[in-house]
Length: 77
Image (cartoon, rainbow, N blue to C red; front, top):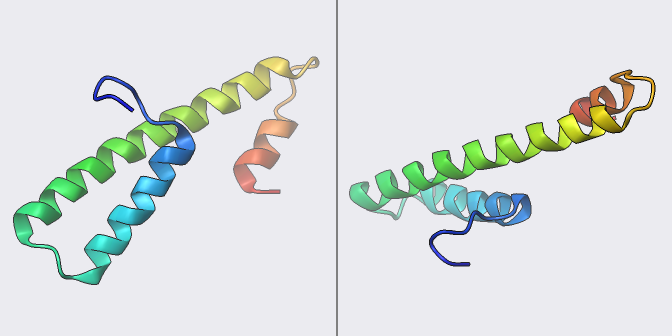
């Protein structure tokens, strides 16, 4: 992935897991911790936007306009 490309949702979530493990490990210096935190926030926002976009697509696909499928998706049912 080049610097201009956005990660997929799966890539963002995997990287967030790596960042979390690094930060929780406590072996990262302060400057590196801040850089990882900033990267994590950026990835979190991308992931949230990807999920919102997917929810909107599901809502549009519902022929009757009900939100039952997207609600179930959001609630993990």
